[in-house]
Amino acid sequence: MEKLAIRSDWSREEVAQLYRTPLLELIMEAAAIHRLYHKPGEIQTCTLLSIKTGGCPEDCAYCAQSVRYHTGIQVHRLMEVEEVVSAAQKAKEAGATRFCMGAAWREVRSNRDFQKVLDMIRAVRALGLEVCATLGMLTPEQAHALRAAGLTAYNHNLDTSESYYSHIITTRTYQDRLHTLQAAREAGLSLCTGGILGLGESEEDRIDLLHTLATLNPHPESVPINALVPIPGTPLEEREPVSIWDMVRAIATARILMPRAKIRLAAGRERLSFTEQALCFVAGANSIFLGEKLLTTPNSSPSQDRELFSLLGAKEMPAFV
Ligand code: SF4
Image (cartoon, rainbow, N blue to C red; front, side, top):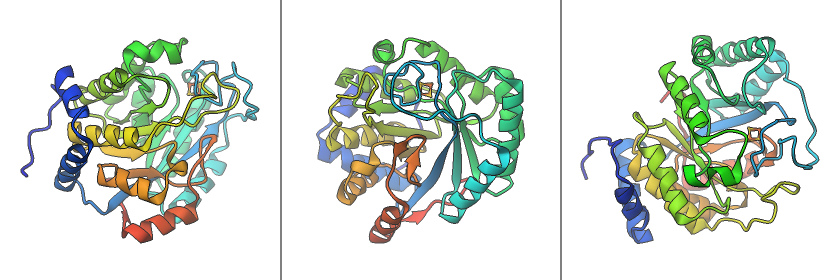
């Protein structure tokens, strides 16, 4: 197989056809493309820290941190720079090469807090880690300031399709989301943006989401594929877990559409067996979160991940690949 030109002009029909390819064939095609663009034994290891927790005014129906739901989450103000640096150092010692910082904000409002986040970015970057942040909506000026401080990537997930979006979030629009991605891109930041499966969306919605991601030009460098972790107290608390086959199908399709992207097996990984995770890696996933927690939801334990890496002979992808 030869490398083909990277495309951002996928039609909706092409994406739908690819998504509906018989699964075994889809996995094999994704695995072949994966080998062309990535070292197959390398997996990016990221750690995600909640630097400001809870009390978010947004109404994302899946989120433990929205002020609108009774999830029992403890609200914590923005952490101190030293606390964040200490967590980043520990993450590095545990094998992480990317450190992601998440703040439960609709947007960055306080200049004082923003300056503190810029200090965190400078300090974490000085440890030799890639730095990612997720802070809500950004203005172009804020995006430039983040870049100047040394931020590697900005995370802002699209979550689902444009047409299903208002079933999940009513406090902002899909276009707001796309504008922030554009501001981050124009400031020279890498983009980390993906979605969540299991929100109640249809197959058509999943295809639409993948089509939107794959027609961003250039493609996002990181594409997290999350499985909903239903949180008691949120409107989605009763949702059935998404099947492993749906996860694998979405990962494989994303791999083929966006060959250079790091496809991250993100939230929901802790309930997958080693065999199921290995299948996701074969289908093109090559990034995970390390650490006990993803913001406020549980994640696989570090000892389990060490065992998984050893079993698969996988290696951590170096930073800045
Ligand atoms: S997902 Fe983010 S923006 Fe939405 S409620 Fe949670 S913290 Fe707020």
